[in-house]
Length: 430
Ligand code: SF4
Image (cartoon, rainbow, N blue to C red; front, side):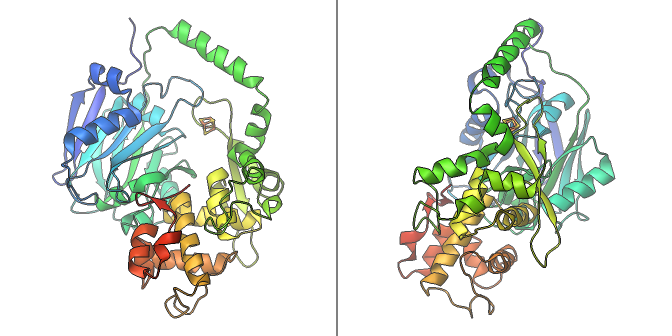
């Protein structure tokens, strides 16, 4: 046996004291729980007290690469983040592609477990054997995409970065974690948990390698997967459009969320579908580590009166939740909303759901222009949505209600609004 696909070390970091401990990754544990979200679920179950505050010191925050991560298996190089979710108060995890998971393993680590709350903003710095908590006050308050750029400038292009934005810092419950200028661990409020721990970012450089049990057999299996998937009829559109490929299908089948799910058919999909994405926004295709499918779309959004912005996406879920669900009819509007929420550090699914809930409240007269600082909140308006996002991120006025997610906002608004707060166990529907 040459190896088992593991990097070998688990890090335990106490953010309150700054103590960093290394321990051997438990091979039997990984066999049973597979790393990634399996390992996260077990650690949460074992280590977090039942009534722990998700945004308090007793919650854990875990980053865990999967067993396949870094092994050149297509779509196999994800990294998961997990904790008790501030949206549901139950188990929460979310994963992202990109390059962070493999790089973490190349640096020698399978899992990083954070506990406690740092007295000041910090980021985790990993450069192979060097593991440090570093001062992040310079980066605090900076947007996710800008912060990633700053950290790469300061540390080196070969560092892989995960960061939160102002939303995570301000404990907006549906905050996300961003990596690779557009890959998000979006769901379950993991960015808010990072923010609660004053952990602004994680920066990793890894120059090692991973040993697998049987390299020849693994290579044969990977080649077989590639050959099989290459000829699949869905592969060409998958590569051309990414998940935006599903927009027309979803609409034709009557399951496309529209105007806060008031209907499930959108009359303007031709303005926001995969064809429009490629025609109006696409700059180039992008892939995660070791994946030949390059379904990621590096794009730009151009709207009158605004600077062009650059992003990855929109993917299907963002096209739905920040597109039809907000009544946006132009792909540039959807891409701009995608960039806005990415940079502020909000999950585009929950974020789109919360904005849509606000728009329906405004449509029904349950919230007023006075409460919106003199603004409207109309379907299809990027300006209205952008102002509303700013109110939420900075918790101004009723923005603070919506920053808690649709379920908690509906409890504040009352007047029957809970009937159209589209959430399950506190998390917005996707
Ligand atoms: S490029 Fe696309 S298919 Fe490949 S791992 Fe990344 S998200 Fe998955």
